[in-house]
Amino acid sequence: MSNSLLLHPLSPPVPPASSPSASVSGNHHQRILSLLKTCSDMSQLKQLHAFTLRTTYPDEPATLFLYGRILQLTSSFSDVNYAFRVFDSIQNRSSFMWNTLIRACAHDVSRKEEAFMLYLKMLERGESSPDKHTFPFVLKACAYIFGLSEGKQVHCQVVKHGFGGDVYVNNGLIHLYGSCGCLDLARKVFDEMPERSLVSWNSMIDALVRVGEYDSALQLFRKMQESFEPDGYTMQSVLSACAGLGSLSLGTWAHAFLLRNCDVDVAMNVLIKNSLIEMYCKCGSLRMAEQVFQGMQKRDLASWNAMILGFATHGRGEEAMDCFDRMVIKPNSVTFVALLIACNHRGMVNKGRQYFDMMVRDYGIEPALEHYGCIIDFVAGAGYISEAIHMVMSMPMKPDAVIWRSLLDACCKKGASVELSEEIARRIIETREGNQSFNSSYSGAYVLLSRVYASASQWNDVGIVRKLMTEHGIRKQPGCSSIEINGVSHEFFAGDTSHPQTKQIYQQLEVIDDRLRSIGYLPDCSQAPLVDATNDGSKEYSLKLHSERLAIAFGLISLPPQTPIRIFKNLRVCSDCHEVTKLISKVFNTEIIVRDRVRFHHFKDGSCSCSDYW
DNA sequence: CTAGGGTTAG
Image (cartoon, rainbow, N blue to C red):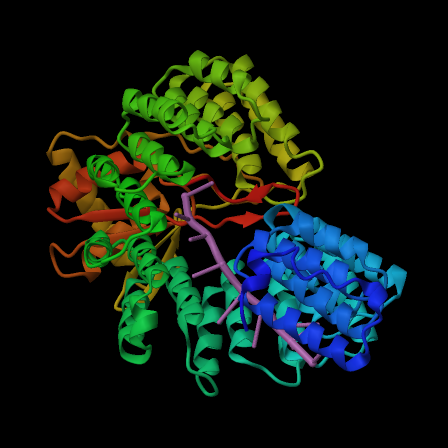
């Protein structure tokens, strides 16, 4: 078939008035159809659209079919505006056309809501009813906007229209419920679907990983292997689960599994390598993370960001910055979050300010809440509290609880006035209004405030805060540290005596303190007053019995000498902890890596629940 | 007569 039509779009005018016979018309449509197949951009498509308009009868089924194709092509060229114009010009739109447009919207970042609106319009108009292709597209759009209530409506329609057994539709439902954090609904769909594909398993495993059910995710992964070979998507989730558990042995196992059981394509995949880097960083093995990173022939932005963040969170600020300097692609806002974290962990206030300015000036990146959060945290932490407050006030967006808490934290440490601390605590508590999601910053505010009162000897106020916590049902989130020994994770809370080897652990703690004293370091943390600021009957333990120290002590007695000790904390690693850790590591000539585990859950209203930004 | 599902870091 020649391409001449495209070069001379106006040359063969066939007026509709010439009443083509059925067979001629069939040929004509066939011809346009084959020309459409050769279309490679919008301008060619527009010519063919114009030609179709001029040379065909609009109501013929064959013509409608052509418009369907045109609509589909328009969408594939991502010109959704034009797709809408084509769509609006057609009278009797088929399900195919509705589906195609809904899909185009679902794929367009700025039109996710429109996809759902279109679906409603489709039901309302009734010119064609939804079919099994409609629902996966709508569900995808719902998942993207975390539209749980919309998704539930669609779920009802699915059942009503009799597509409750369709694999694609059910996969869409699992994905939707998973994205919205509704694990039980996702699970229900998964358990009840009559037939499962690889995607069903992957979506379900992904849903578990998203809510932090890492153990269950890995269990499901093993179960899956009875019927399917894992692919790249599966392994991505598996690696996230290992990272979430912070288990280096599981992570290493997953890496080996990947090399042994997945085809080269999957194992070589940049995305998988990025997951490996992230997993090794989160499991405390920077060495392996670097090895994977070095071995990559191709690196994308995520690879660089993962590596920089790895250095940053391990307190290796200089290497993070070196890595940034070697970066050959344009950094994004995540890169700068990583750099700011690197500066924060090393107390490099001025360097941090430089990066902040560089981001805005040289790269034109708008600072987000997270960037302000980082910089305010360390400006305040370095004692420049009024400057930090000024930054909070001049931020273009509303500060969240995490930012206020950084300020309160600094006030607490730097001995700011009780009035100022009270004011800031009030702001934190205000952010809770209308926000149901749990955020440890709220409980943190109460705990910090009670500490402010305690250090000012305002014991009455300490009592008031404690009472408030009870009244508001706020529980202090206990600090918890874990260490993995021979593939088993041991967890410790502050003052914990439940471990079978408690006696040896506490003896080891004495040894640690003796050694520290012998080098002239009197751990002032052990002299911190016991403040009972909790409302659940538990004691507020002095730093001496903090969970990470118990975990380190256990590590020292369980591991061969000089083996790196990797500790995980559920809350953010604080600078005090770094200080003590550094000393212990020096005295015992052992590398101690303390990593914080962060869980992020994003909600539709833009809030997030997490212990902190890092 | 057409088509469809599952990833990006803090």
